[in-house]
Length: 305
Image (cartoon, helix red, strand yellow):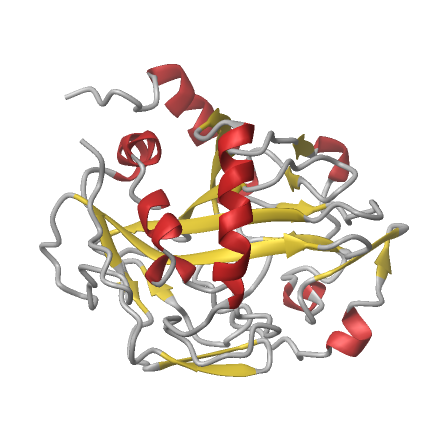
């Protein structure tokens, strides 16, 4: 049955070819602007957060859909889920969300791909039942406007089918060194890591001439495979913070954080005691993963009709 907000045949073909589709409208700029004002104090309030972290931690933006009602509602938005069902099928989990602020003067994020998401932790965080598939479908929502001046996303279309990086290789966490790197004249790193250490071919250089800048109005979202080569510009503005919110989705057949009860990333170890995936669509016939029915404040996860 066709979904009201599902992808058309042409859109689905474009997604399969390029690895991304969008941006799409979700909230008006005025609506998300008012919401952002209310969200800011909630983002600093960690009383109900599932991870015991200081708000200054690089991981402080992880999984806020599990304690902030707006983000709990957001991951269940029918305008998003109908499109995801076109891509992933009817049975879908949201396994992670992340807040990505880019403050004035922040460096860009270097080119990267994510298949098993082992690039920082050293161990696979998601495991597909077949090696023919991998990665997650990411929904990146612009909480504020995103443009080339304040750090919008960049994609290299069509690169989602081949991994140019080996996530099993070791990356040393050296923020004091990596965050000062300039590559091709642009200040950019990877949150304290040098992603080039994972290159299968040490001489590999992403073809930036093929890159597309994903400029977005506040309230829009774009969908892409995590295996698509992506990066972001630095924020060269003096007074504008760019804020994006990502939600990452996989089919229910995928195992999340297999055989571990902690996450070790960016110099921090997180306990998964309070963590769980969210069944956003369909049924879970596999029962691989712990599923939460409500967030830590009691909001019940339910999609719109």
